[in-house]
Every structure is written in structure tokens, then in C-alpha cells.
Image 1 (cartoon, rainbow over the protein chains, first blue to last red):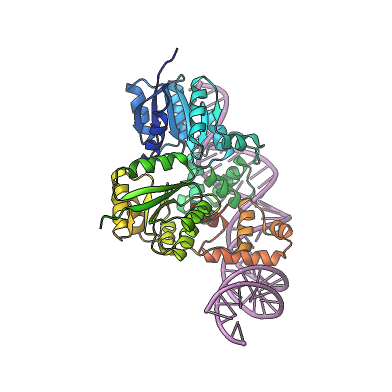
Image 2 (image 1 turned 180 degrees about the vertical axis):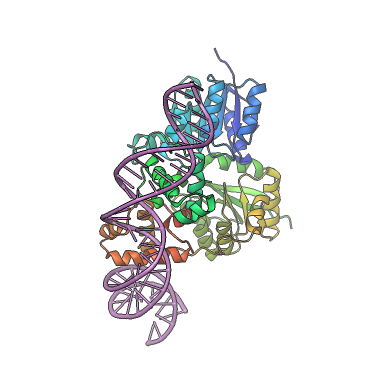
Length: 211
Length: 211
DNA sequence: TTTGTATTACCTGATATCAGGTAAAAAGAG
DNA sequence: CTCTTTTTACCTGATATCAGGTAATACAAA
């Protein structure tokens, strides 16, 4: 009954890993078997080792936490995954859960809260730290519960938009018609229900969809 | 000669504080006397206690790290202050140093790098972790070495811009003339040498000047 | 008290964006 | 091989933005 959960921590900040390790050493039900700093290493690791629980940062270099969670869950649906981040947007948390995440904790959570969440997650519950609860309980201001993703071309264009380029400049740079870029712009705005590029940029950056 | 530096850690993430504490316990020259989660508490603390070294997160709730550093240094110029953050923009680091910071370390730095930076800072040097060095050594792409700050009104307007409001809507909301808002917009764009609101938003959010 | 910055406000013309359509290739998934 | 999504492209009209001016009032610092 008192199974020991083989646990992996994924975070690109050594300090955070060390902090979490310390906290987890208090828990008898978990055993840290891996400390990794990237999603790629996680994917490699779980191929070769048994893992029951993953604590992962959402903002990781190269692969973001949401996609990483999805990938892992597709192959290993029984692994419990808890997401973490410093600040968070409602929609990001929702997206994480929709992709199979078993819980979401803000790094500003206290030690006790952290422990509570991990224990509950092990018992099969979907858990959130207090601040996350506040965030997700308030009705979505943007009307988006799952974030649509951008296509390759759309990403190109948003990136150039963030650099202050006009429709014409983007068209020139990507060797497209002015009108094509205009269509893309419209689609992107529509996708996120934003009124103009200013709001779009704010949304994209807050949800880490750019860069 | 082997003075022991009374050190305070300021970070709103308990986990990070714990991680840093662990790392600092290896160093004989520093002694942790305080673990604080906000700038307000830091200001209170140094009023009443002796402090030689501060390790502070740059992204703190309420007061940001740059302003906090400036405030502390004005009153206590002899305290050594090292800034930390997860990701970082060149201009943010520059601004921190210009406001009296003695060093800047990314949280992705290794333990050894962290220790090296702290030791060097104690010796009076201005220190940067490796990744930060890379960031600041490349010429400023935006041509801004110190970030101009926004006035109260300008902040109001940028906030509304980020919500997708048009000039007219902002004017209505703030009981201003359409033309006044137009002037503010122009000044803001000029301040950051941005061509349009899209670029402005990207800049502001990357440098944490919004919200 | 003077200097500087912030805030307010007006005028104009060129250019850009946004919103409403439609639609045909091309690429990728099943 | 079919179905779906993506990428490409065009048209139009209403609105909004941007860039160039100028300038008075207000407030805080030197």
C-alpha cells in the first residue's frame, strides 16, 4: 500500500531543483530518482527508467511544459505530472490540465502547500495550489478555455509583428503578397479573440506563445 | 580579514529561498540572517538589522527589483546587492547595475557559478553569471542602454493599450481628449524607439514594465 | 524662482489596420 | 485517396494609427 513513488524533477534552474529536493526529502512516499534540466532529457530518461511522478517547470527552454506533458502522457498515461511556474495565466493552467496534467502549483506556494499537493496528486486527485485556485476560479476574461496554437506561418508573422514590422514589410520579408499577410493577421487576431496587435502581443507574451 | 557577511535572501518563492540557503551554507564567508519574500519586508528589515549582502529576485510583487535596489543603495550604499532572475533582457541587467547593483546572476546558473559570483562580489567586483555575460556583451539591439521609465499617465495608457483599447476608447475611459491620448501614445513610442504598439507591447512585457 | 518634466490639447495628411467577404492551391492526416 | 487544415491570394470600405508640427497649464525639483 505504501508505495514509494519514483520521482523526477524537471527544471532549468539548479537552485529550484535543490529547493524541491529538500522539500521532498521530508516525504516518505516519494523518492527522487532524477533531476533534469530539460524536456529532451526527460523524454530520454523515462524511456529507460521507471518513473511514477514528475514535477516539471512549465517554462522550459526548447520544449514548453504543456507540450512536454502531452508527449509524456501519450506514451505513459499512468505517470502523474504536476506543473509548476512562477506566475501563471488561467488559460495556461487550463491547457496544462487538458493535456493530461494532474496538478499545477505556483512556485510561490509554501512548503506545506507543496507537500499537500503532491500527496493529493498521488492519491489520484487533480490538485492546485491556493493561488492557482484563485486564478482558475474566476471566470475566463478572454473567453478562451483552451489556447489555440499557431501554425508555422502564423508564428513567423507574429514574430515579425513583435518586432514592429508592418504588413508590407512582413510581406516583403517572407516573399508573400501583402494581401496574404493581411489574411494571416486577421486569422491570428480571430484565433485569440483579440481586437488588435497590441492586445495580441500582450496575450501571446503572457502565455509564452512567442519567442 | 575573514569577515562573515550577514546575508539576506529576498524571493517570493519559498523553494528558491530554500535552494539558495542550501547553497550558501557551503560558504564560510556568508551567514544567512534573513529570508524575506517581499521588498517591503526587506526595507523594514535593514532598518533594524545589520546587513552586508543581499541576494534578490528582480521580479517581485509590488516593488520590482530595480527600484528596490535603488532605494536600498541610496540609504545603505555599502550593502552589496546581487540580482537574480529566470530569464533576462540586456537592458534590465544594465538598469539594475546602473541603480547600484553589484552583480546579476541567472537562476539557471550552476551552483559553482553562483558561489563564484557571490565570492567575487564580496571582494568588491561587479559580477555576472556566464549567461548574463553573453547577454550584455552583445551590442544592444534596441539602442537603449538605460530604460526610460513611464510616467503615471503613460502607464495608465499602456495598460489600456495592452487590453486592446483604441485611442478613442482610452480617451473616454480616462476622460481625456482623443488628441491628448494621441500625444501620449506618440511620446511612449518615441521613448522606447518603437515603431508601433505591437513592438511597444513586446518591449514592455519583455522588460516587465507592464502590469 | 527658474528650469524641466508632465499633462493637457489642437491640426493635418499619409499610411496602416481591421472587418466583411470569397476562393484556389498545397500540404498533411487518416 | 479523401478530408481537413494551412497557406496562399484578391477586393472594398470604414476606421485607426503614425509622424510632423505647436503650445498652454501644472507641478516638482534645483
